[in-house]
Figure 1 (spheres, chains in turn green, cyan):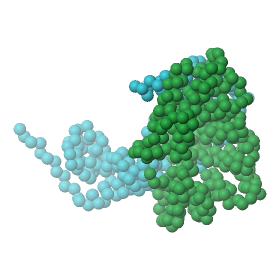
Figure 2: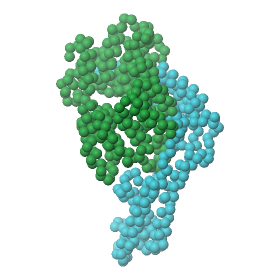
Figure 3: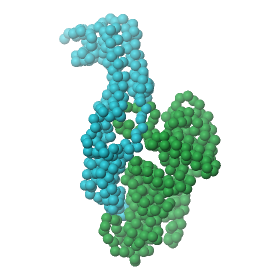
Figure 4: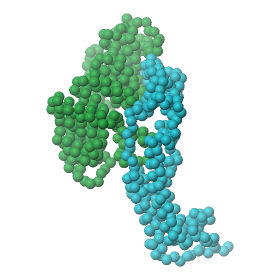
Length: 336
Length: 259
């Protein structure tokens, strides 16, 4: 599928992002037509992001000027994009500090930079609002947190995120960012808590289930935890991976994690502590673990085989993930 | 059997150009004008203060926990529930905690809800004024005669609808007066407006009336006591009997794959 400018390019592989950014001259040239189309501004925003990603600051600045001319420099989303641009153009830490100060100044002006559009929609379902409500809120607050994080002030970023989440606890994006922050700090139980909040908001997100499993597995592998809690983490990780596979067939990360956990569990079978029932998940019996292990192995080798051969219907796996799966399989001494 | 003689009324063909056509054009133009007037009159959406957002989102948080508790393990659900129930009952998330338990404020005295009502008033006015004007215009100039004949037969019941302003008892209901044409335009121009202005237009008053009537009970509307909502939510949370979707997930998985 060719990349489209109608979607956020943040998750695209580099080659496709570059392809998008190279459309910049064409799009910018065509922008002089007087009539607005529905997708026009989404295109500009995504083009801006793609250009920033590929280092084409000049084209990005042009996009920015167009957006600013249309929506005015006071629009929250435009302000955030403007900040993003100046972050990208900053050449040293001092300039980044200046951007940060700018954010602080904006935030001082109005204490919540979250537009209450969703509430207004609820209050007056029959009324229309002049600006299309930005459903994907991208307030300066979040921009500031991201900047703090990229400047290495992780604890400040975490504090700011916790403040944000205190008055907006239904923000899945913020929760997952917080989880990632804690995860990089090695605070696994906090990371797990934040991921569980994400799951509360979207209980069927298989990637979050798998991610939670990964974090729990990591928590189990750290030396700090004792045998009992380690086993609890492993038990829940096993279940999380199983759930993610249940929600999404042939989910490579899910099977990979399942394989990791079962291998480890089978290795440590001898010294399993007595399980107590205190509201935590308990490990299934060894036979089930063995069957799960076989299942994961079979499925992983199937995925690896098919995607190496580039079979129809098996494309779309991340190559690095397939490579990792291959390595895991060969580590376990399984012939493909 | 004697055939009922077909009524023929000789009309000036100019009636079409000078009455039917102008009424339709005026109706469409008013619709377009009304659309742009209501776009202009909209007050900019005001920003909510942080505490109000916090109040609403905390309540939503509780509702989410109640709805999706099955994604959590029993222990993590219990910790969350205990924390939220305590906070909800003590009113920690309230916008102004000292007002808790005083009952709901009068929605008329709250300036923020007044603004919403003003908005609705404005919309109503934008609807009523042009309609009154056009109707009196039609009544003053074009009442008392028929302007067209519909190409299909109708029953007698339609007489009052189609021949308003023409007091002739025996006339075929197919004949239509100007004021009736006006009403037909009111009800029938929605699709024309959709074509001209896009589907989200404010031109047709009918859609607005429907929207006003069908609106769901507002969750965070004025006049709802948030303290009571929190207490109710705390109670709802407290009675949940926990199960997890992760119970027996591996059995389900194994069965599903082998089956």
